[in-house]
Length: 117
Length: 119
Image 1 (cartoon, rainbow over the protein chains, first blue to last red):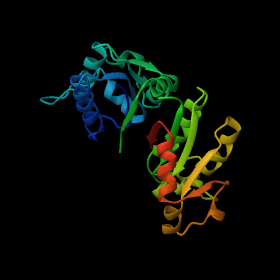
Image 2: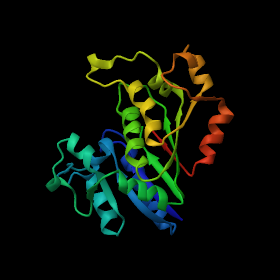
Image 3: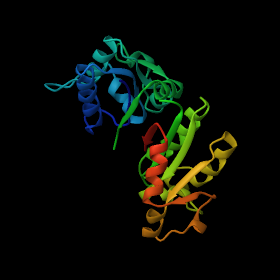
Image 4: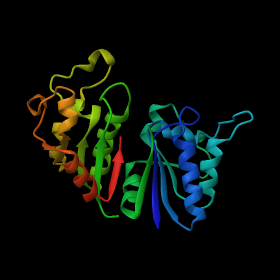
């Protein structure tokens, strides 16, 4: 089935982004399709291409990797502005867009899963 | 999945961005012809209490926002009865007319929507 994903928390502070990633990997391994990943509120920080965690998992690279597999990964433009997130900071294979993208995922997906607090 | 979405307000209106962003998401996705039900449970019910004055928190009162939503064709509002009573809040304390629902009523609304967005 087609699954849409919303992430509401940022990297390293909260488990939401990690769980979202593992959920998506597991869903793909089971043959499901991801209609899109929407990074909202602090979730946009998961797409910061400058993330370089010494000796730890790179959460931005994970979302970049999912984008490279052809999944639409969107970080909310307005949330990015609120957080001083410049366009050139966006990790590869992630794009900035608005709530219209979220609406499309909502309409397109058979199931929609939110990861937050 | 269709266009029926329940936006679920679970948290206090101030202290985290969740309820405010839930409100913004309603405004944001509402323009894309979504059929939205707004459901208030737990501390989420405080978002509808009259007389909010969060100026000292540098926030705008969310109680002013929700009553404007019917102008944007968002007209379905449900508030969980036990969440109100546990907090000593009555329907008369709320900024707008809503449908008061019990546990089963909340479940029925959520089931009737293809998607639940929990904030």
